[in-house]
Image (tube, rainbow, N blue to C red; front, top):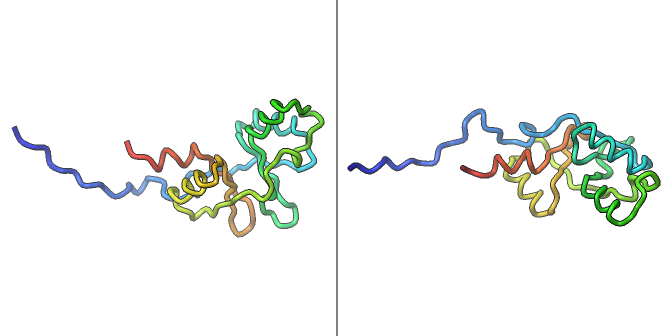
Length: 142
């Protein structure tokens, strides 16, 4: 019987996504801070999104983010989503990431901050969102 040849780790395939820009969701759904939380829940359902970004109209930069977890906590706390406003539930000044960030670095930011979504910001403001489900599969090996 012969021993199987030792396999050396291979370099990533040219098609393997390496940067946030390769895996981000470019169509970020945005909302206004004074919208009702019920509107956010409706948009999340119909856009298939798990987070919505609140953009500063002057700078184009993310001013906040509201997630399905924020909505769930509001409901569990007995808040009426028809009365609660997004600005009451959102995380202000969310961490953001550059599209040229390497995927493992994005995963470290997410796990270090204990959050699942990062707005992706380019020179002109918000250009997308990256979710942990976009990042995590590309940081693990079979």
